[in-house]
Length: 417
Image (cartoon, rainbow, N blue to C red; front, side):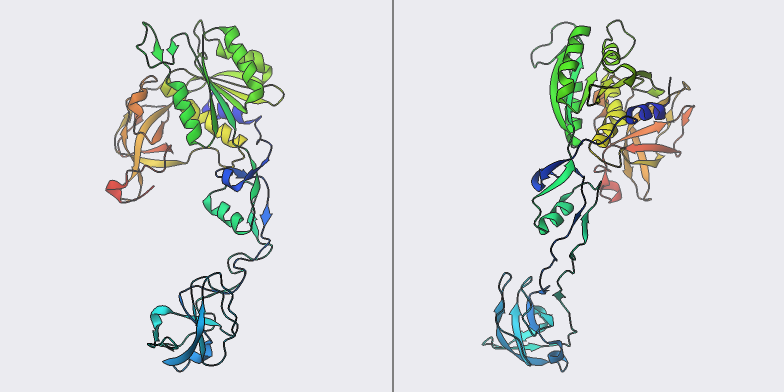
């Protein structure tokens, strides 16, 4: 057996981000920037009001309460045509340009307007610049807006839109083909024939890929036939940025996938027995001129999910240009014991983790273990990583990989994810 770290190192050693492409801002959410962009406009482009109120000269409020003559009003989007002089004020809305001659804005709540609307009384002294947004206050000309490697979220896209950018150069989302292997698998809602089982690995992986921001394509089920498996891989390699298969990587008589991947990838492939449970058997290689990565995951569903989290998702994030590849991992307090036997492996236990009243992350429950017990994982938001030994007692600290930061079960702690 080899260590988890050695297996992950073998996967990542040949992977590089996909060649950049240009995408519209609408299509770039979640992608990683492959260019640096600087501001070509000031934001705001003109002095404007931060409040609904009255624009005036600060000096005219020095002897408050101060009655001022109202010259008119300016709405957002308007251009004021009059210049304010001594004793003048102008009604302004939030975002409206500040009239020439004015240097501050008094909030509407702090004035008294006479009945005919021609005179407003300023009830306190104001400072120059109060409630005024100045040109370039948010974004200055030439300011760096976007750097290489930044993941584009709503704020980043909004900033680019504020500068009139319609597109951005990014690393594309990997297109990933997913297939299952096995004579026992069926893809049907009909009554199961004797000896058959429904394929759940493909639906799980396709959903996991899409949830992680990748493009997932269903390649169906391939029978346990070496030539059929090889043909499926060969036709898919030029079409996809990565391939995932499940089943056929252990030591059975019809475990052909590991043989096919080794044949297609040569010395760029490796069949591994990794010191983890579940997920011990794993095959990985890169094929073709483009170096398309192929992941051969175990067929047992829990092992499939573990392999996805430890190997596939981080590798695909690397292809997509991300700098942070792994899920966040924290030290969590065990509220339940995690017994185990020594076997030379790292045990990966799906669990429920949440932040408790002490402000610390706690593992509050663990799921039934077994590489085939996928239904037992419902609700799990973490994987507790139990080192080789006799297990961990309640109250111990366990290294915990968070699968879903949005589900910390805030009901008891009052904390959102």
